[in-house]
Length: 382
Ligand code: MG
Image (cartoon, rainbow, N blue to C red; front, side, top):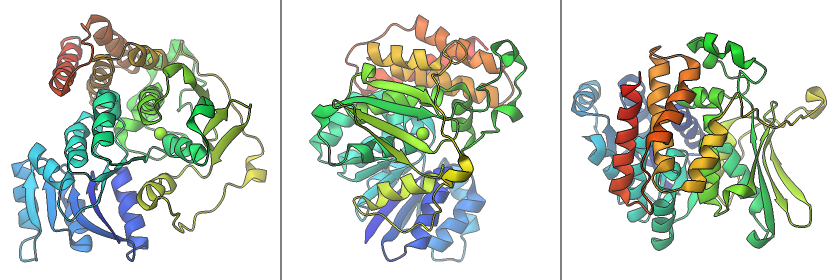
């Protein structure tokens, strides 16, 4: 029986993870849950899974939740940054699913690792911001970080039973998002509704916009560099609109192993939770004959310069990846609030990266400062 803490339980990954737990009550027990502000859904989850500890965004949300759960056998309710860390390091938990959105995932990730919890990592921003620190701490504390991101789960699985020294290239696949065929000149006309309409994957708002700008792939490049300890040059991004091949690994003898399946996050989430075993998810295989052909193309970096920004950030390292990430988060939330246009996202990320004075070998406080700096820089340009 695995005892889980789920951070981000009301989000897209969190709810899918709880579906898996619901299907396999003999394998998993929820010991703690953390969410942001969606207290209706959170209260339902608490009633169903009966965790001993829960955390929410702030005191207001905690009071609201306590009222909703009144009269019931309530869990201990905490809130804010310290609350999230308490959930991440709860004594009875052995595996922490980190599925919070954005930079907010970093501190709970570090708390969990220091408390020697195994990590199922959906929050890629953690590794983008502080990959060296996080991977170093994981090694020191002998905890494993299992990827929940479908591409990284695919790469992880293609690396099993092979020697790392034989790896030559990681083919990181991307759906290409909704604007793959849209001419660059018309990007200024893109509205929020179009950008939220992803062709193959069903995800939360932030990651859906990141998929439309291909910044999601940019973040995944940096995530892969840290998770698999490879140089940026070993990663090749391939646009694959059908999203059936979730990524591939090429070896020195010219062999390539690909991981395929339905574009459904459940497979990657369940593998990270049940590794090294596989759970029965009652999922259909892709209907290859109906799909007919799988196609691949190079990303158009003129339209989607985010790929170039990410390669630049992980080549230069230091605080630059954290700046890229924070600038992107700030720009995406401004776009979600309809305060800027779609092409402004690229412009603002580039602007912050160009104006940043990079710090080499940063500690955590340097990284957090760089994150704040980038957000303010972006705000000043809106
Ligand atoms: Mg992904």
